[in-house]
Length: 76
Image (tube, rainbow, N blue to C red):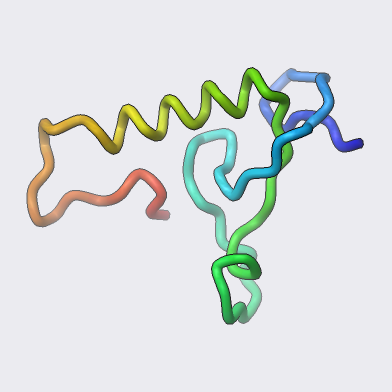
């Protein structure tokens, strides 16, 4: 089983996510025809996957500084 992709973590990466350790989607660079093909996959332990998802969710929910020019947290 792959190890967790979070920096310095050596646990098993039981969760598969399209979010990088920084909380963004990272394009594969290949010509992809679907979301499944377009973004890299990362493996995380349960603890770091939950931490990452909480961080992304908190950024999405914050109401300050959101206007028409707001960039989604998953934007590159």
